[in-house]
Structures are given as C-alpha cells and as structure tokens.
Image (cartoon, rainbow, N blue to C red; front, side, top):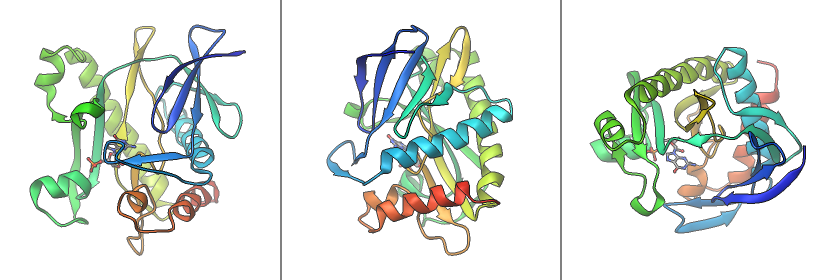
Length: 236
Ligand code: 5GP
C-alpha cells in the first residue's frame, strides 16, 4: 500500500490517497483549534494520542459489530481507513448536561440526563455547525430518512458500548461527536473518537480530561490527553 497525494487538510487531520481507491490514510496533527478556528495552538503529542485512542475505540466497536472506517493503525500518526463519502451531518450524543446544550437551555453543567439525547449539526465551519433536525437532513438532501435512522441507531449503539468501557476506567462519557459516511452501499462510522471529539470527565472528581481544557484555558491539556490514553490502555 502506497501513500499518494494529499486529498484534504482539516484542522486536526490530513487525508492522503493511496494506490487503492477504496482506502485513505488519516494523518493526526498536533494542531488544535477551537471556536471555529479563531483559537489555535499546538498540543504536544496530541496527534499520537488521538490516533492511539481512536484505534482502541474503533477496535472495541468493531468487536461489538459496529462497522467503522478503521482498517489498521500504520504508525504513531497514521491510520489506514476505508474511503467514505462523508455525510455532512455531525451526530452529537449526550449523557450529561454540558457544553452548547447547557448554554442553549441556560442550565448548569453536570446533571445526568434521564436518557441519552441525540442532536444533529450541519457540518459547516462557515456557519458554525448549526443545529438542525431530521427534517432539515432529509428535505435538504444531506441524507435519506433510512440513512439518518441508521446513523442515529449506530450513534446510540456506540454510546452504549463506550459508556461502560469508559466507566470501568473511571471516565464519564459526557458527550461526543460522531461522523458517518457511505461505503459500498453501507453506512460506516468515520472520523476519530478521542479527547478532541468527546467530553471525558474523571468519574470521581469530575475533572475535565478533554479538549475543554484547551477551549477554556484550564491548563494541563497535554497531561489530560495522556491521562485518558493511560486509562484506556490500563487493565480495567
Ligand atoms: P457541544 O455542542 O456541547 O459544543 O459539543 C458536544 C460534543 O461534541 C463535545 O464532546 C464536543 O467535543 C463535540 N463536538 C461538537 N462539535 C465539534 C467539532 O466541530 N469539533 C470537535 N472536535 N468536536 C466537536
């Protein structure tokens, strides 16, 4: 398998073609951005940790029958993935009141939700990933009704699998952002699953161990990412 041209460069990752049209290489950078790219920094080894965490989660999910784009981790910063036609809808799954939901509804962060909440956002940096609903998704043609139903069921299944796995490692899965894409007629989970895309709180103290430390200048960002990786790789 040969690495070919750069297909796309995002804020945290680069995507390279390979000599196989069905496969791409996802390269994890140390660059961090927040608030639609207005805040920028480099977090030492972030790309290495996000690649390693994503591999752990994708393998766990595949083991539970959730189909993902993950093929194999090639090295510290590179992951071989199936090439998806990405659906331009970010799926947010929430277990605890936090972040934009807390702001939108004027609630304090921290209350456990009675059941998971799924939200959809239109993937557009220029528009700040606006919240949309199932009608927007289907009527505007971002995905079919069958596709959004499949993605919703898969997102809830991912939440069901990750929540106890993380709890066993003293991490509370507060919320997460998932992206899906089409591959040979199926919907696969894509992108990455890591402290950039999830909120992880220490189960005992509530300490934030994710990108919120960077977003809100809480300090010890790299240390928190390392701590998540350490817990994921320690016996439960
Ligand atoms: P919120 O809507 O509360 O800002 O985010 C909910 C969850 O989705 C959080 O775990 C957050 O990290 C993740 N999330 C939402 N949008 C984005 C995004 O554009 N980029 C990244 N990395 N994570 C996001």
